[in-house]
Length: 156
Image 1 (cartoon, rainbow, N blue to C red):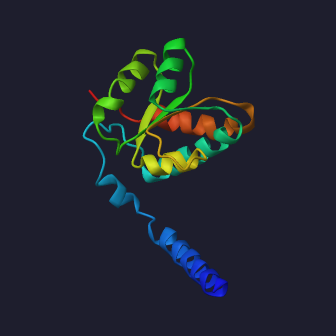
Image 2 (tube, helix red, strand yellow):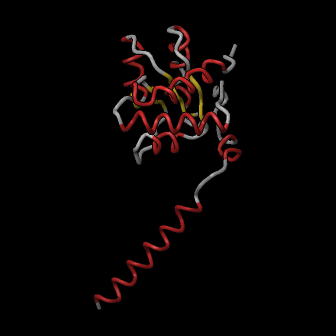
Image 3 (tube, one colour):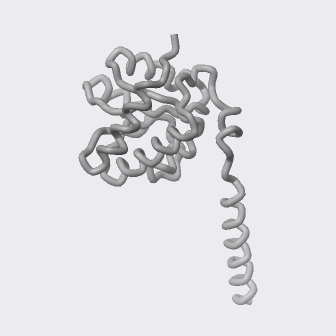
């Protein structure tokens, strides 16, 4: 009887592994679900760079995650790159953050997926806002992202 249960468990694990591989969405599919306020939207190349920078920063505990925490540290005067997820609903949750960033001249950009943003930060939970702080260990990647995000055209 126990052998049957083990075999079922193994089959379920194999099925789960194949399902996770097939759920990867392309950049174009993710763009189809973004909010009307998601501007400036990072390109596919810049999104990958931002995900990598978030991953490096999260290993060194140099990120601020979530609307409440990011808002608190923007008000305190902390600097960094603010990365917002473009598929967050309702928009009212975080629509005040771009205005705060512009007032304090912080660079910010929208990326298409909050699930990808959360997973790049090392969390299973989707995250709609992350602030990346500067650090010496990943200074090169941070500066490159900072320049590209600053160069994005701001909305009117």
